Length: 97
Image 1 (cartoon, helix red, strand yellow):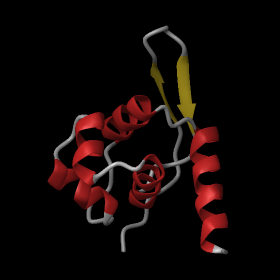
Image 2 (cartoon, helix red, strand yellow; image 1 turned 180 degrees about the horizontal axis):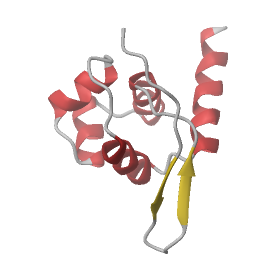
Image 3 (cartoon, one colour; image 1 turned 60 degrees about the vertical axis):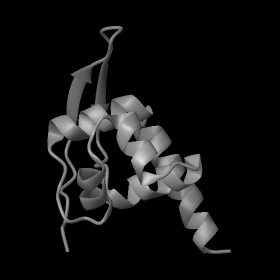
Image 4 (cartoon, rainbow, N blue to C red; image 1 turned 120 degrees about the vertical axis):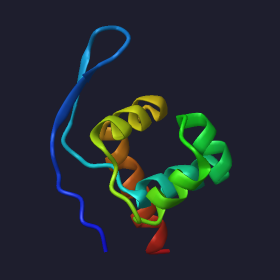
């Protein structure tokens, strides 16, 4: 089991506005996002600019994301803390059905 510590970091977007993340992106989050969007692992890996095997390892929690990789993924998917929380909440509700 891999545990990810919660941390905050900032990056500049194209418009110069800095985003600060307080929630860490997990492999489970990426599986939920991919499922919600109807994407295959191959399609998601292409969309976020990483290899299929690397995405598979992230999704199965075999590796921990480096800060810069998490930034890249979240920026390309538009996953702010707010959207990430909404995604987690939606999948939690689905599991209760």
